[in-house]
Image (cartoon, one colour):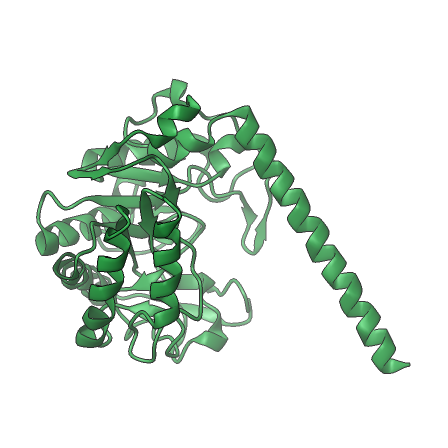
Length: 337
């Protein structure tokens, strides 16, 4: 991408965004109030990013329900926990973001599934099928019933209606990426022995995110922009063990299946697939023509300079973490002396 193109408008569905700079979602804790609303820190945080000139802001993880997978409040924001409180927290925040010419999408989630920390839950962890919890393998996640899955889907309709009402410019589904609940439904390693319509071949396993899209359309209308956070590849060696070795056998979603699933989600009607950085790690670029909608964030990343910058950032992060570990050990030794 030519550098000047970064500052040209782009469209996602029916929404025009002033430039191609997107603030991607981050699941930041500390931005939720006790009723699941955005707190003042959240409003100030997003407004500062809008003030900096970003074209599109995508909020972090916001749950559509907090009953089936009940998290201790206020861990994350939740649209339906107290709809009035949630709505009232959004109006001014969104108006302030819009005042700087930025657009803002609400990222909504079915939940964390097997990667939910048991210490953050008031209920047993859930998953598409019975499977050990990621953080505490001795804790078993129970399988969601068909009725519970349908209930989660219905909550997206309610959440979408509220998102549109308060002024969000679109919605992003969290997440067919990084092994969260919606992603778990799409992978045979986690979705093993269900006997309902949410299991089967790849297209059948994609039923959950596709039905979520339909629910969002019912709540917000056919022209309301809907994107999905997406990982082409899972990088799962086995349960509880990941790895970035591209040559290693993939237990989750491999590249071939990831490209096929991207086409399925595009055909279903998602306005854009927001890919994770893993695309660059195994040489996938726009020349593959895997789907015309998986472009927005990836084009910003698809250059050798950006790859080098990301690798540099990872290296810096690794150095800082190791320095902190060293300092912590020194403090512990001092206290023991």
